[in-house]
Amino acid sequence: MGRHHRLIVFLLVLVFSLGDCLVSRHVPASEPPIGIFLSSKIRPYLQALHGMEDELDFDYQVFDLSENYELARHYARSRRFQTCVAIGPEAIRLLYHFGSAIPNKLAIMALDPEKLVGNHTLCGIDLRIPISFQLKIIREKLGPGKKVAIIYNKSENGELIQGALKDAKEKRLTLVPLEVQGPSQIMERLEPVLNQIDIILFIPDSVVISEKIVSHITKTALLKGVAVCGFNRFFYETGALLSFIIDYEEVGRRAARLVEKLVREHICILTPPKVKLLWNERALKILLKTRPEKWKNLDIREVEK
Picture: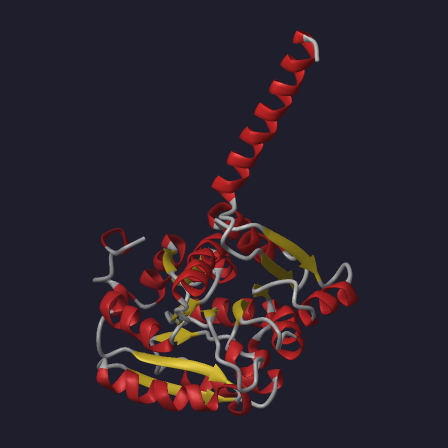
């Protein structure tokens, strides 16, 4: 073998050795790869996926149900992965229905994921912001003694409202539950109490999901001096005084850390999302004009943003 030939062989060996070192740093050889099942390519799911990719310290493969459901189902049923993450309700149903051979499963980006997994042990992040936390913030930032109305349908949120009644009382707030069976009943129930309440707290509810309905309620409430609290950026843009904002990329990063605990320490955690508070100065200006005696002492520059 000539000197030139030996030099080429040496360089090739060196390149492959360096490549193996780089891969071993990113993917620990002793750890199994991760399967990630994505319900669809809507923006919140993609943001969560990007957050996971930023933080995940394992090799992984992504399956998009909206592109190839059968392929995703095939891998959910196979023994290819030791650990899988489901992003969104459709992916959670698939993974927990067909993934009996997968020892470690994690669910994110769904409200009340326990309703999707049957009797399985649930690890992951529940997107529902605990109402006890929301009432705590309302009590601390907007003051005690406030009357807080919640519009809901009983079949979906009746149990949650029962717990909220107790929470509100402990926090020196008065909860005004407005049960409706359909969108047509919302204003019928709300209008008689608008002059008696201080706040409308929106919670995820299929009856009160329409952006048109939310916009109408918020504008009507502001004109009556009633503050609105919502659970995403749309409420802020519509005129809510306070919005509880979930950072979906942070959900993904947090999920990656939960995966590490699940794989390396066999610790299963179900946790609510991290929430930021977004305040609306324009809404406060309207409230101060329409009902100054109620809101004159509230200065949102002094509260956490």
